[in-house]
Length: 314
Image 1 (tube, rainbow, N blue to C red):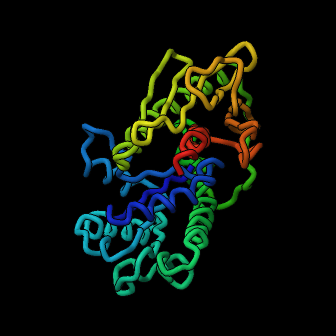
Image 2 (tube, one colour; image 1 turned 60 degrees about the vertical axis):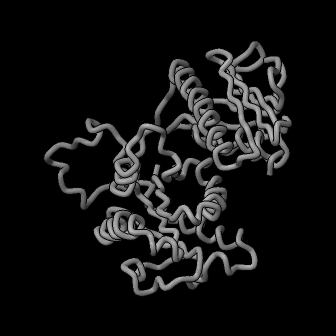
């Protein structure tokens, strides 16, 4: 799926967080995956990790403000290279005007930005409306890129063609072939999903505490099929959950809104489903306001459960 890179100044981190919430539904639907520098783990090379995404991601969001323009790294290292890739049609650059600044005569000034008419997000009466326009622009870009991004992700062997087919000028657009998935495929997908969700929670709790001094989070991996997460505000437990995989009653990944919950009760459940092309997860939609029937990626499932944990903090 198309990958989205956030190029931004840390002075605008709160605005980036708000935008990422608007993009969450696109991640849950499997349309995009996102990355920014807060995903860099301790011990990784900061510049090298960013360079990988600037050079390879499909959609690059330039979050524009006076701080962005003043940052040598954002301007010289990220923006200029992003615009070069945009000009070569290697990526789609979307300037997102966060705060009022002199951006029109910059190298990206020739690219249509968002929100409408380049009105800065901070000047909109309803910021959600402004960020929705940004999300819609990302959605359109992702759908345009969907076919090419999928073809790049295929193994090399599946992309080989005979010499007689070297000219792609005349061909059908209907080239999709149905796939089938075994029980082994489903089980492997389920275990990968659970391990991803566990790592997602552990990293998110660490970052939540780092950004909010009054918040503490604990993550405890009980066994291969179960972990707990707890959030404290000023030492008082505010929210907790147990996430576990499989039981005698179901075969998915369950969320229980309490610590050390028994495996026979839960508030939400993710199950492994498949269409004729891919495996994915679906929620039962048991929680208030949850969407039922949406095809979820690993990240989409993790974000769904994370939202359920921290809603008491927001």
